[in-house]
Length: 231
Image 1 (tube, rainbow, N blue to C red):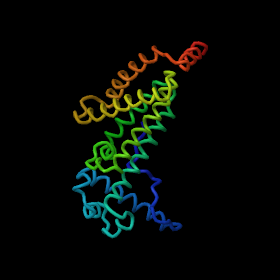
Image 2: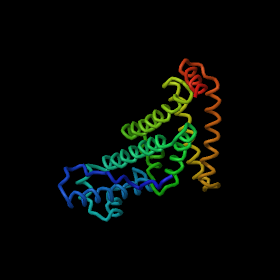
Image 3: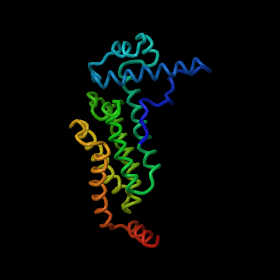
Image 4: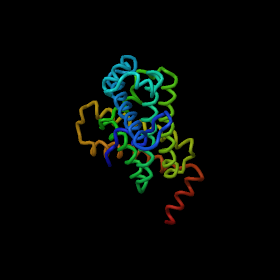
């Protein structure tokens, strides 16, 4: 899998851009500030992190931070939104680029392992935040889970012939398995290679999904199986 970028190169400053070099510098500074914010929030948590900490890490003055974000919470949500968007986009693109159902499932699982193993701590910010009791943060976390489940659920529906509702339930289980397996692998100190961990998680998920597929009970599934026999 290709290297996961630390932060999207398409980040744009919230203020109105000016043309030319000034806009490029503003965008680069915003990215630098957000990367520093991600690091500080992941290391200290929302409550212990301060705008002073972030300013020092980014090498800018605190007034610069307040030009970009109105408050620490606004800053935190901005970083969280960018990481959520990237996570969903990365999983979607990885699935779409793969050929065959097994390869698509492997691509989704590999995304979770790659993201927890990468220097980017956005995964921790999304799934292990100390600020999840805040309704805006909780809504974003629930949204990313729902978005990823819908992406994977679409593929599950195609494979099993289940309805979208049924497929999304199965997709939620698959995503939860991938997330939990990846995080456990990291916490155990990477006891096996990432490739082996992905392969073993894939085998568990795939054989479980195959068992569901053999119990097809919907008209869509019957049509799907007929098409498979014809092809």
